[in-house]
Length: 169
Image 1 (spheres, rainbow, N blue to C red):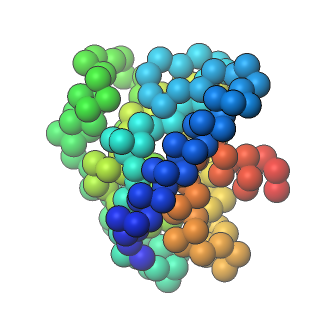
Image 2 (spheres, rainbow, N blue to C red):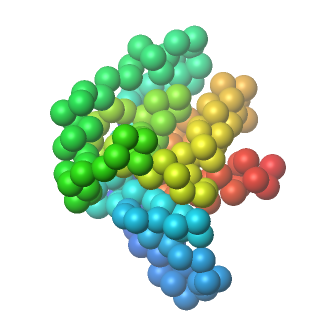
């Protein structure tokens, strides 16, 4: 299943609505899309640069052993392009990982529209997102969650999905 332009437009609209809601109901925790993060920052990709993109893969393909390894294909040049698009001129090894917003394990693509430089040392961060990715993959493969629904939810707000599926299960 591939996300359509309509799906992406919905996600962008929902992100804008969520941002406005967060601004109105802020609990004091700092929120940002991309950039320098501290321990209370929930780092999300810039939806204008990384709205998410998915391959036309269904449950049977995604759940086949070795699927993610077979489709993973992000070149060093693409990674450099992603850093440049996000205004990161230089960084130390281990500061970031170029991450798939919609993970390969649930049908995400290697397109630039699905890639962002996720800071490695934020909390919550890459480790928490990895837990979410595994959980969504498992839910898809055992039939508890539709592929497209999982893709839309993580593209909309990975941290809200993490809260929903990992923290509050």
